[in-house]
Length: 429
Image (cartoon, rainbow, N blue to C red; front, side, top):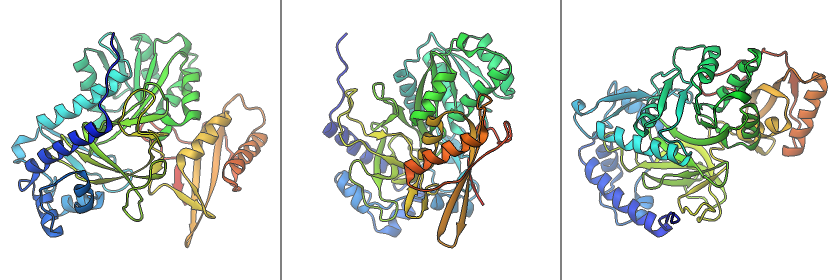
């Protein structure tokens, strides 16, 4: 079989510019939200290229969308077509503010299904697979989109909504599921419950863990822990958002590196403070333009996700799409500056998971005026014999990594919360 030929960087940019023209032609002046926004900014809908787009078109923020939906309940004015054209309604989780309601036309839904199928295909999921979805199937977009995309590929799809964790573990075993879709945290919890029920995951048929919803899938320590608990399975990370859809897939060659589907999105990485593009290799905020979600588009949307691009635009896998080293590093509102040191949630998790012995943890954030401090409660695995020594070892590991003293307290087994959805481990005091 001939090697796949991937588009060069200049071809990707050229196609994005063409798609952008089509997007703006569809959206303006039909979409009241963007028509008013760009009129107020004095922006013409005509673009002469991506550089012109970056220079002239303002960012879109979640606060703007939330205010628009509040002013024009319940869906707001970011709708390109009459309401009767829309057949799907989902909403964001609300973990970082007011939940947003999002409508989609059949055409926009098909566009997102195609993006999700890309994630599945690159994870080597085929019609021969049985996929278990360990979700509650609430109003968030990702559950339904993933389920339908796998069905369109011809997979046998098993919904896990309305089931206890024990029932889900048994269903995975009974149905001989080969692919598990859930958050990294919940995959850890499923394994924990399997051990308590004396269910040997070494005999399961699961060969692929497709995870998202939080950074853990691209954190080496968490990946290693997951693959140890699910013997024979490989972690496949990706990410997306209800308001933009599925955005990235994991590089098939470099674990922990996510590629942006740049045929579907224009991606930028900016300094959160200045709004200027950051150099390759520096951390910044991911900004996305949805090129195919014409019914409810987002143009230069500040996602709040912190990422770092690879220095080399050409990846070892042969692709030239934007590569994000370490996946999603965290959120702009999650990063804590402690005595001049920027501490990201993903960095803390990597240290704790790499050390081993951590069943669950919680980070307590205390702020006094402009100062912040953190402390950690760590729940040891049953195999840990000396909890006090365990806490001291974690403190030393954190001291080495950050050159900061971060207090760690060992707590009783089972005392910290477990999460099915996005884990809320960082608590503001």
